[in-house]
Length: 119
Image (tube, rainbow, N blue to C red; front, top):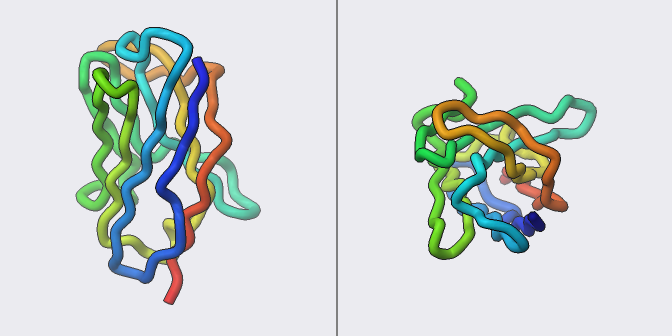
């Protein structure tokens, strides 16, 4: 499966962005999908995930601010990010993994999209 992220950019603190990850090359609905981010000098971390069954989970730092969703008809997973903070600045990546009840990361990654939160 091939993954292409879009929707990143520069936004002021408190602003919003919606990231998209379009998949091709396989049956999208069978994959569990995850959004990761990596800030300079830090390890890549899982931000949010959605299983093939629609179950979601979030890292504590984004709960209540970020929402992950998927549209299987469009082969796309989204990350709606609200109330953005400077510490959300990172390159965001999507991952195609597996799992209907829980998310397990797979080997498929997009190229990443930069999100910068700054005034």
